[in-house]
Amino acid sequence: MLSIATSVWKALLLREASTRLMTGRAGWLWLVLEPAAHIVFLMMMFAVVHKRHIAGANVELFVLTGVLGFFLVRNVARRGAEAINANSALFAYRQVKPIDAVLVRGVLEAFLMAVIGVLLLAACAVVGTPIAPHDPLRIAVAAWLLWGLGMGLGLTLSVTGTLVPEIGKVAALAFTPLYFVSAVMFPIGTVAPSLRAYLLANPIVHGLEAIRGGFFANYHSDDRISLTYLFFNTVVIVFAGLVLHARYARRLIAQ
Image 1 (spheres, rainbow, N blue to C red):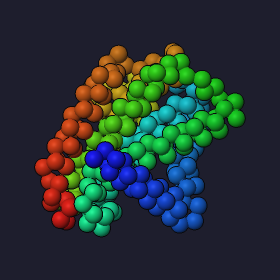
Image 2 (spheres, rainbow, N blue to C red; image 1 turned 90 degrees about the vertical axis):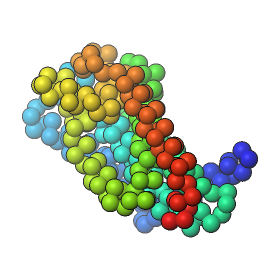
Image 3 (cartoon, helix red, strand yellow; image 1 turned 30 degrees about the vertical axis):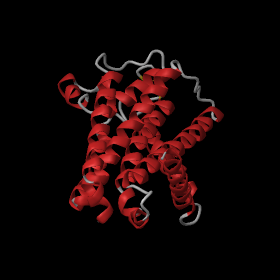
Image 4 (tube, one colour; image 1 turned 60 degrees about the horizontal axis):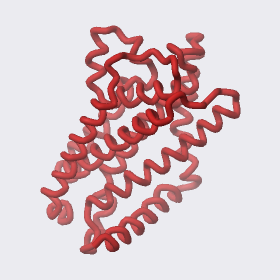
């Protein structure tokens, strides 16, 4: 049974990788250019207000960690949500399940984001930005939990969006306002206390701020930033996604 599942995952991974990287001219290049464009734009915004440091962090890494962390969640969730519709023809094979397509896409996106992160960090190092992290373990745990959160959203949305297409459309649009309330472009510690409590309900904020705390020893965040809170939300959303896949597996194949 395990050997069959492994073979299916390998085949799906190769199929997804070729589609993701080879579609269009220099498809792989756009994977790097999108986050790079966001980072450059935000850097220009900070340059306009003459800010080179943010609460114990340099602007370059502050922006880079925010953009990459958010894109990790967004890309895994969005690609996972589209996995069932994109691979529906393969479900004619008994060995291929809808959940396989979602999981493989999540793993592929994690790998691609890791490569993009290394490339952008290397670019920062080339221009003289110190990139040595203060607490690598904290960064790794926060990044893993953010990936898990995106995976859970992908599992959940792949079911709800397939059965009720309107939900998928609304969820895709929701990532735009979510970008602005996830502390991608501002430190949570600078937000007014009355508003900060609402923003801290967003688990992505906890992941991004934890990553920044792992990079910068003197980063001033909020005492309520908690990887435990992020972990709890990740477990709940992943469990919900798995339950939905188990409950509606036959309907998803028949779609």
